Length: 115
Length: 114
Image 1 (spheres, rainbow over the protein chains, first blue to last red):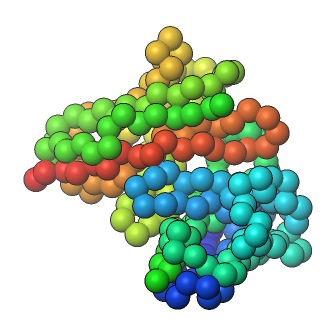
Image 2: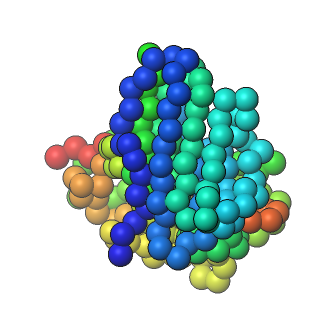
């Protein structure tokens, strides 16, 4: 069974440019997460979806970040415009249901460098 | 607020030696605890998790962890480390409130000397 798939794996952009990351969760997983991992740190939650509804986006910088999960499957995370401080790994994850304790499976991440 | 502390940023062990990675948590209720491993350029892979019951939890790749409520700890152990275990290890706690969210520690980078 395929795991969480993310693309692109690597992206280098100039500051003020837009960038988008795509995620396809494990089949049947209705809960999808976007995490950001800064260098030398653990991942931090940006947004969590239950099906197509964003149920927790309190940590998403809404002035420049946006996300969508149309049809409750794939998801896209966008940054516009990117800033130098946005350089990080963006991890998508999914779980079977949003109940506390369900195992969260992570993708390999999208590595963003803003120059 | 919930938090996770991994006191050791870097640890170096010799291949074949035993390993213990420390994790302390701050949590107001019964915690859900996890250990993940991240190899260079890869995503996070779940090693093991603790929800309730037996406080000694077995995971993949020969790892185990012991939940000690009195010490607010969930340390990861392996009796004999292999060179392929070199990676970064993250401890995480499941948060209270609605939904399934994890708070991660800052990670411990493991180096294995041959």
